[in-house]
Amino acid sequence: MTGDHNLDCDLLVIGSGAGGLASAVTGASLGLDVILIEKEAQLGGTTAWSGGWMWIPRNPLAKAAGIVEPPEQPKLYLRHELADGYDTSRVEMFLEQGPRMVEFFQRETHLAFIDGNQIPDFHGKSPGAVTGGRSVCAAPIDGRELGPRIRDLKPPLDEVAPFGMGIASGADLRHFLNARSSPTSFFHVARRLARHMLDMLRFGRGMHLVNGNALVARLLKSADSLGVRIMPATPAQSLLREGARVVGARAERDGAALEIRARRGVVLACGGFPHDTQRKAALFAHAPTGNEHWSAAPASNTGEGIRLGEAVGGRVRTDLSDAGAWAPVSLVPHRDGSRGHFPHLIERAKPGLIMVRSDGNRFANEADSYHDMMKALFAATPKGMPAEAWAICDAKFLKRYGLGRVRPPPFPVAPWLRNGYLKRGANIAALAQACGISVDGLTATIERYNHFAARGEDPAFGRGDTPYNCVQGDAAHQPNPCVAPITSGPFYAVKIVAGSLGTFAGLATDEYGRVLDGQATPIHGLYAVGNDMASIMAGRYPSGGITLGPAMTFGYIAAHHAGGIPLANNRSAAA
Image (cartoon, rainbow, N blue to C red; front, side):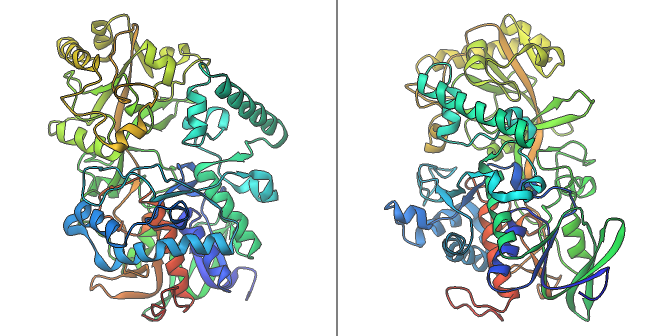
């Protein structure tokens, strides 16, 4: 330290999501002096609101379970999925180092994992796709293990967490859905709710941390144990350069200027640009002014990291298949007049729901991935029209699964009818009129859908035709876990708008995470990870976890390279 408003370190990390924390924790574990700054008062970024899953083919947990695939298998899948976007050096670095990253964090930090050995790739009919063994997630953790740091952890997203309580995918979620029909599930949910309410009274937040909240919590605990200096509410203002090298950053803390010099490098990990109106207008075809898009990512993700990189010569990749990780979103009215952004990730594949445009026609397989659903909606939307749709279900579905922000009983439905978020009709025609959907179009669609759904079939779009569809559906419903008739009035609908979980377009980087300039030359001392780095998936979405998996892996890689420390496969750290 050289003064009240000047700090020195080996590695400076800007941003506290998975990519930033992975960089910081890895660097500190390797012996570097690390400072991490975050513009928000709370830590975790988009990761803290996420499902927390990481796509890491050939990971140690899969191998321990006897799921062993040759290195060429995931390469085959990605070559097919990414096509001409397959960047050999970056993709194969990720595939090589991802399993080593998991081993490193298991061995050296407080990060523990649970396996996703039953989670299939999105596109089960593609060459190289598998039905499981490529996913891991952070294990749940008791928030009390963080000590005072728990106050700095961003809580789960209100829209998807009842009473602020995180619900893990898999068995935990199934218990919540089955609580009214299974005594075992009822008691599981009762215990979870009782503990959560006690935690709220004692600590002001839930302490049973799951999903992305658990990932951030375990990384924060590791960072604190390793001596990382973490500074919330410290936005970066600009990067420092000496000649062609980035040597630190200027920031602001408590209203005062702060200069942080970094001997080894600076890592940009600010979460991409999901709320940067100008860049959305430039890169999102469906949002010509930038305002026709509603991301579920935190509102503070406004593209600072990318702009910092550009200011020192970094190049933004605009040649990706899609600039964002698309997702269907509904706008949730809040009492203060604001609107939350609910990502429809779970209920779409359940039996008894369809999505239609205003003409009343379906446009896609609703059980496919959120990204594929939105791409289909964009394709079906006439030029110049907003990309909007309606999620339609009946009373039986609503009672069993809920719809968007509307949760199943015992949660009330009436408030959502009053504020207009949920539409209701005694019959299909009345529902269509309430939503402004073509009555004839919706009536014909429901009749056609129900005719085949009675037999568990969907010849129009093939719901239930892939392992991913079926896992997202309801295994207890047969013969097709994704298909059931829509017959039990009253009928309900929620409006769907164009949204995303984050962005894919970002700074061009090499296989070590170094930011590249316009001549594809590395900018010395500058790295980008997470959504500040252009996605290695070339704007495509082959499986769940393809954001967090690479974010963690390239955070691990960048910290090694910045520290001059060879990776486990003896790749040169000075490359």
